[in-house]
Amino acid sequence: MLPALTAQASETDNLARFPDTAVQLLRDNGLMGLLVPEEYGGLGGDLGDLIAVAGMLASGCASTAMVWAMHCQQVDCIVRFGSQQLRDRLLPRIASGEIYLASVTSEPGKGGHLLSGRAALEENVDHQLRFERETPIVTGGSQAEGFLITMRESPDAAGHRVTLLYADREQLSLESIGSWDTLGMRGTESRGLRLAGSVPAHQVIGDPGDFKTVAVESMIPAGHLAWSGVWLGAARSALSGVLAMVRSGGGGRTTELSAERIARARIDIELVAAYLGVVRDEVLGHRREKSPLSSTATQIHLNNLKVIASELTFRSVDQLLQVAGLFSGYKRDSPLPLERTFRDLRSASLNYSNDRLLTMNGALTLLDRNVTLLPKDVVPSSASAGEEGSIFS
Image (cartoon, rainbow, N blue to C red; front, top):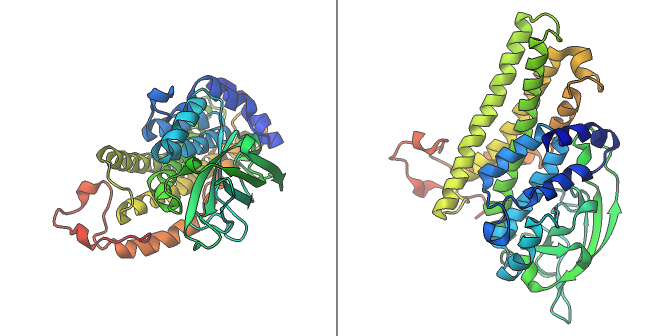
């Protein structure tokens, strides 16, 4: 499967086209249902498996990997917070590859701010939840068979009372808006949409007005872990390609400066892999123990992960581009796809902006008086957990 993903990556990028062929391979191989429990026909994987597969896919095509990772992020929300009726109806279809899920969380006037909403749900005479919604960016929205959509709970609700709901494509009227002609991640085809429709109440995911819990316990951790896996996989593949080129003599004479750049790229990639591993273990540990992820320290770690992974993977590929040089690295038709990887990873810090996360982490750090580091066992046992607060409270 990986050679097929690699073969279509250049054309997908050149045409800024959704990777239909690659996604069909994922459907056919059951990977759309990686996180679907086995009882529903899925593979029964966890977030560790999600990271591993995301990295593997990204070594062939980062756009395909990101499309799939964001689909799995939505699946995790349904598995953990969907009603029994919704899970029974939807999860077997996801496991069979019938449904690709897109996420509708951004909104004009608020951008990507996740925990607020403007457009409001209304209940019609048939007790259906009716909505009209515009979003400036939806990854693969024109191709999706299902959508997870955030809405303000009601016309009278406060902006932070946000409800997450699921809608089948057949339950919606859809209109594509805008274009997707970007520097990198061109194959995600993340154009805007106008949506309108109505759904029954059992298609609400989590409690009405309490999307915050779904976000903190599922959407955010699954997203930050999966995205980091994608970026790490792309950077690791770039390092592997440059090393093969240097060993073969294709990059010219190895100098002390190029050796230093290779070493620094390796350090950055190792740091991302290490931090991703410990945050993964922290999240999986909480899930095994059925304890919440809402603690201040865990929120900081998840936000740190996204910032660290997005910045260091891009920096590593920048170093590698210097090693490969103008003809072997910077040219678009180079045998090494470093130029495409460089452009793809430049988007990483913008995908849910690092500026927003750093501002949040500054406030969170003031609440974490014990400076709870990872791994947790480096914190003195005398530290008092009772001093901890939460920015979400």
